[in-house]
Image 1 (cartoon, helix red, strand yellow):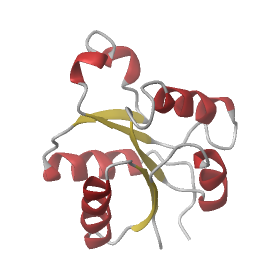
Image 2 (cartoon, rainbow, N blue to C red):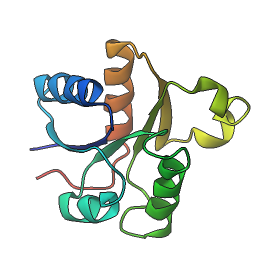
Image 3 (tube, one colour):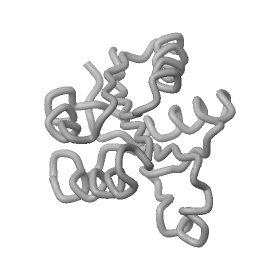
Image 4 (cartoon, rainbow, N blue to C red):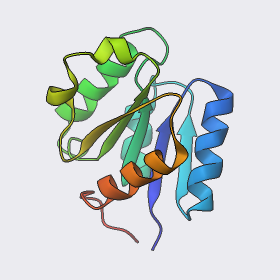
Length: 130
């Protein structure tokens, strides 16, 4: 039973950290450093969870990617972890962002906290594990 996690992160060191942490937990990790082909990757990979650097590329690109995911019936319910160092950007928005399938982890993150959030959100993933 393979659990696929798709990571979108433009900082190479952080991307490698995600890969090491998640693969050590037994997850199959797919990654990219841009959101430009992200939706096609998501449709091909069919991840059980997406970890997205919210402030990737231009400031708005992470938000635009979320909107694209939510517009597609095949991707709208995939659990999503938004990772960002820009805590100030989310002030007052956390209650409306966080749901049973979306959570926020602030950078620098605690490894144990990240893994707890990953495990919790995977329980709500609609994608069948194979």
